[in-house]
Image 1 (cartoon, rainbow, N blue to C red):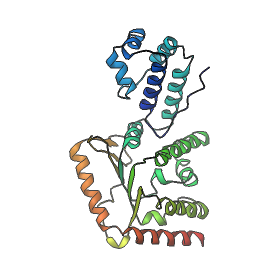
Image 2: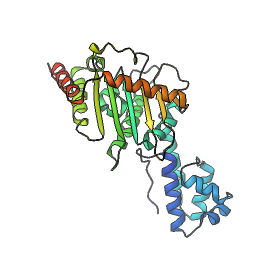
Image 3: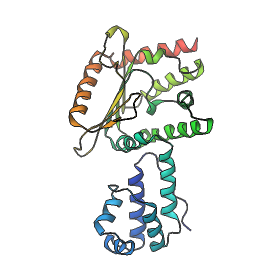
Image 4: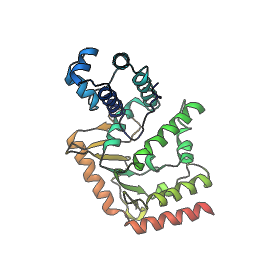
Length: 278
């Protein structure tokens, strides 16, 4: 009996399903053409699913399980992948694939610590206050946010270039113990050679980022960059429109130019830890 396959939050759900499909196909001695004929797909369609370029369906997973004698291996995996995705807002789900596959993420955040660097307590303080969200759903949302951080533990994680507005250090999201732990975590994260952390101080008098935070994902293989734009609206939060992404990239570099150097930024965070301690 094949043990249940669990979602890997560090990779795209489409890629994980495709990888498992390819593994089972090869183990069974099937070519893409032979499997396609058995499940009523062309060999090119099988290839697209295995490469993560086409979303699998539950019907397909069931047919492959039956043809390859897998029990419910792929059906169960797809169900768990879909349930994990359902914990996140629909508009946010496309961004996860870009975030997982990006070679670098350039982040500007004027309001709070970015999700990829949040502690569980800090994340819970934010997510538990969403309108209409009960305790159980809030915990599922916290788990989903913590799972996203798995990309930072990969052998080759994306490079994070993060600029935080100084107000992030002062805004009381939760009690002092949670706040202190969060900024200690930031200091620990800054030791990672794949993470660059800078603070934009009040004295810079910068106004370019006051409209809200955003993230630019630099994709591999010369693929176009993609941006996530934070706002109160649920429309157009993820964009690959070249002019819009280019404009955000210029804005990011101008914000970063006014930010403190890394060592001064870390000194400011250390002072913040002391302030939340006392």
